[in-house]
Image 1 (cartoon, rainbow, N blue to C red):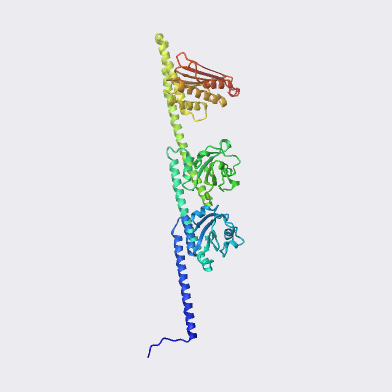
Image 2: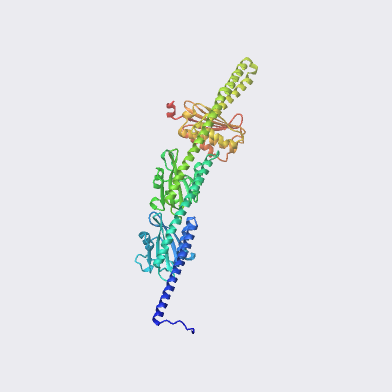
Length: 565
């Protein structure tokens, strides 16, 4: 049988070719679908690979762009108020983005996607009545697809895709992007959990460092230590500690760390500052660049978002801890507020422990000083006093040596006076008493004098010398010792403050070169005389018989002081 080509009737041949064409078309669609599914799998893999939230968000936007072959894409993160908090764009050249006045703010079509919480697909973005146009230098965009991203049932943000290559976005494109958005929600949730664990680790590490630093022997400024560690927990440009004023007075920024800290540290906070006032009353406050909530120190630093939380120490408000971000920085989230509140609570415990430890150390020091003072009084002074009495009795029995023995007895009396001054310094617990403050002035000048000045008190100095008179007495001693340090070239000096029933007298002696005939400056002397005249008193500066200079300052006691006796 001869080979002949297979022949079909024309009608059957047409049906076969049609069937083969359909099969090829279906196979092509299957291959295309498989290819797009593989693209979806690759995109999902890329999305879940990273744990850093910023990188995850960018990977999501890039994967969606590639998945549907769009020219431009973006991912917008929505805050609690439903506004765009973060906008990550892909596909747009950097130089074009820089030329634009601003990135989208969540109005127009973008706002419609936020409000609807459902996908929106448009053939021509510019013709939609909800469109509000584009900012200057924005590239042209026509086709549009917006898909929400849900994390644990809540809208986290939206994917925006424009200018699909080959025509408008299809139902299949929408389904693919929705599937990617589901995977993206899981990836975002994982990244947020990872970020939260990292923040908790930073919080734990910072609190451990605070406890170690505050419990160290040389802890220094406890609130400064707290402020320095806050930045390790929360990303902030400036950290402040605002302390309430004494007696309920105006609050003050006592500690500042970060950008512009030198401008604001030491400044007062106006009484009308609602942010600080609310935090001082115990509330945790977050201000995200709202003019009505802006803190008063905004004029000192270019602040944007601010968090203010109370810092409680031993159950009492010690002040307010504030963190500030630059005006161009991101807003603070509720998680940031919660983190700072927890940090402040734990830091308050650490500060309370440090203060309790410092109080205990002070009590131990006071007890040691009291013991030393008792030993000096009960043993040393009594023995010196007995020796002085013995010398006086011996002087009466030996008239020929009476002068020498009396001089030795006088030296013993002077030593007893010095011991009593030292005993007072050891026992003084009130840092605001006049005696304590005068001893502080003497200690301040001791390093710049050739020897420590001798200090003598007589009479009820702390009881009767108070108020403005006390300030002037301290100023007189300070000015006199300053003159000795600068001009006298003295080897010894003595400060004597005595109080009688009606007057207080201050004598400051030195064994220096005396007063020059034509002093170059007389402002210090004039200041001493002015302070004396203010109390109807007198002041004289003269040469001692034994050489050197004596400042003699005397003023009557106020009437209420003498009546109080």
